[in-house]
Amino acid sequence: MDEDRFNMAVRKFLKEVGVTSQREIERIVREGALEGRSVRFRMTLTSDDAPSLQHVVETTIDLR
Image (cartoon, rainbow, N blue to C red):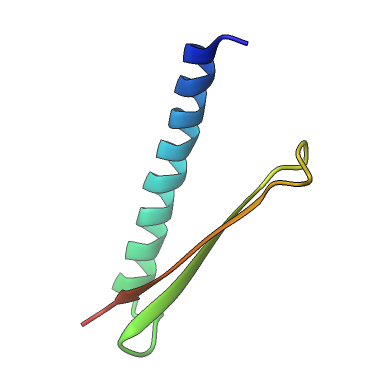
């Protein structure tokens, strides 16, 4: 395995996830689709090729 190539591919994937996720969050906030003063988010990373991979990141963002 080419370590540099692998690292770049992972970074490219994570950048795409980050950018597109931020756009979606901003869209729902702009559209007023959220109620309340905060919103909880959960991102789950899984892979059909690695069934044991189940990485979850959760956070709450204050909208005030």
